Image 1 (tube, rainbow, N blue to C red):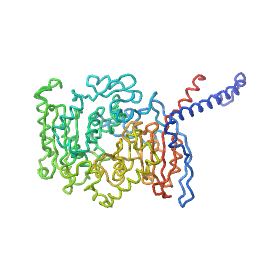
Image 2 (cartoon, helix red, strand yellow; image 1 turned 135 degrees about the vertical axis):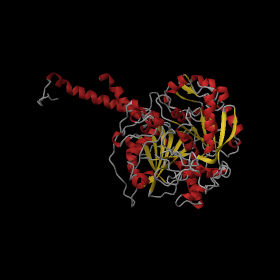
Image 3 (cartoon, rainbow, N blue to C red; image 1 turned 120 degrees about the vertical axis):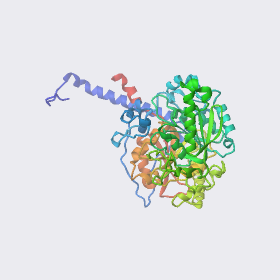
Image 4 (tube, helix red, strand yellow; image 1 turned 135 degrees about the horizontal axis):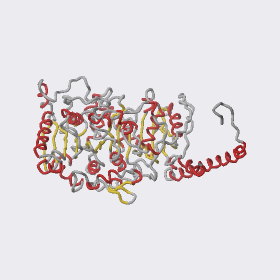
Length: 605
């Protein structure tokens, strides 16, 4: 220690105690690491036999592997246990309130990126397995009481002991979500015969609508913004129901045009007729020709409900008429209506859109300067995206019904450079072989140990198609810098999103059981720093979850070095054909906390 003038200051009375104190410090540290080792090994005991092998150096080959320095990443503070970097409420004040712009994606600059591991909440435990998870989850995994207290009268969820229960209620589900969907099916028979396969639920609550549809063969993306109190999307994913953070505001949603068979809003509080109907224009863009838009809540059935909406019957009648007029101008027609549910259908052919050529038409037809599938940081425009006249077999009436459409060659594959029916069939058969090999390497794949899966850089959704009969669902991600293959994924009856892996994904921490990537670093390492991609993978992967990393032999050792610093255990495996230039890493994230050190040292503070 030095005095402020730089001269050393001696403390003879403390000097004699320095050695014993130092010895005690090292003893405590050693003991804490011993306890930490026991803790981690106990948490991982069930699956440790699958990932026990240590990654070894590759055999001699013509490839010189990339080598990097090993780094141990610390644990973030507990304040970051629900950290969503690009939708962080702590940063909202920096952005405007217009059309809720602050709730859109605003990623932190590079110098603000976290280089630490997001910790789980105290008391976290592996999620309840599917299908029980649809109806219950551990309270400590999503410890948010606000939604329970605020929505208790609507029966969204309720807390009992150490669990949250999901009875299937909702604002518009007074008799439960099952009865609500039964009525919807009466209005839309196409929900019963495989015609409708993909759906999007805007303002999804805790995703009970999407959860109910799973048993009816309909795969739903539940969409809700990040919020301070409710954690709607985290509840959905904890239940094992597909969901993603997002909001219809100023930017297009990260989906291609003509993607979903059905869109749904149950009192989602989106002001559909405001701002020139721009939110409905985005729904129109992502909805397949012949697809259905379903609305329940204001102003539907205003005649019976207007008193409870703190308004007048005249105002609600006016709102309904404005909505009907706006939808008609976008080439929607009222398909059916009963009680609290109204259904509109998007035009299947382009004859209706000819009227948009009139100079006084509103909304006008979009010009050709903006590609309709451009959907990554692309502004929503106040115009109608008219479906390409080339799309004939992709309209609702013509696309094969589920499950036949899964393996039928999608019409839009011809829009992809190099895309063809033969390329599609080859990809389909290739992934059947690969998935079979993965299950040998990782027996948990296909079992009830995995529910939420992400294919981080899919092409045609081949991996998802190969595991379609397993009790899981796959979020197919297409790079915003890659060829636009996402329309093919949706045409197959699968779901997915655009994303740039140089940024954080739109989800909460601990929401996926398995992450799969195929050559992601080979394709993106010139843009995205490997360390940050892997830290993001750690953020969204559940403790005890897995990663299947299929990569060039050049990257495998470097990836495993970073993974070791994140306290993942990995092993290297060969591909299904034993190709030397490509390897597979099977990694598992541990349920372990460095806070044990602080606990052990606390008495000496």
